[in-house]
Image 1 (cartoon, rainbow, N blue to C red):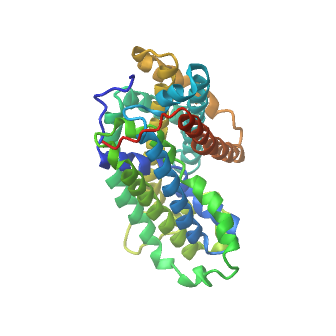
Image 2 (image 1 turned 90 degrees about the vertical axis):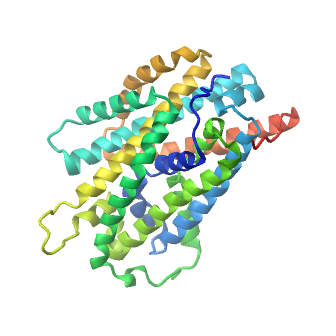
Image 3 (image 1 turned 45 degrees about the vertical axis):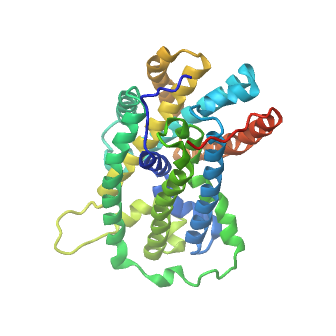
Length: 369
């Protein structure tokens, strides 16, 4: 096996990794995306339903991985489908994580340039984030998990501090009437919200590193549950402050919410800086875990454990270059849509085919130790 046995992570760390991976760009864009899809204030219901769908899918992926104890998706896909087809699957997965990493780093550069550091070239912010990611990733998954454990409390405190500052302008009437157009708009929004839980694919890999793999299902449910709380409160408060009509016209409505906050007697004015600090932490966590999985995949394709570090560094120019392919912010969002379709291939089509082949070959022997 090529899994590093020293890279053991706890069930709590697994839940933190899942939630941290999910909470990226969605914090800023989900209110607009789901409101645009539903056309009503009921997007928060779509977020809950999408979270439940993600929990079910994540649990199934965890159960599937438990059938191959101590092995990641890269390893057992080759065991099931053979070396050549398995390597094709591995390269598809590496491509997905590489493209997702480039999407996250480019989105970070766009938002940082517009709201936080307009005088700093995007090339600098992207380069610094990628170098920091490589430095973290070469330390292994355990180092990544320990850093995420430190980030999550900071994220929770700052995020809710900014979010609840908006309660001064919150109007519950902006969320009424509930289900005014029935369930159809809500169900239409589930597709959008389900893709916002991008991160459940980590359960194809993380159980192999857990010290208690039997807790994988619980960990993914808790991780997605944490993200769902963030998302639901964000959508409710953003719509409650800005109204449906305003939200659909804003690219990053959560930032506009933070910019609208005014507290008498407080001299600090740029409250969106707190939100952006949280968001940059979450973008970094998503980026670094994508970077790790992409490097891990290349190591398994070439079956050389000593090549992990060179692959991590070698991916830097690739991620950086792909990040510059989109020319506008709309192109960046188009890449996000493409990633949604690639994700369906990774968590639905490929696992289903592998499941059928493994079942036919009698390879499914669940191990929950």
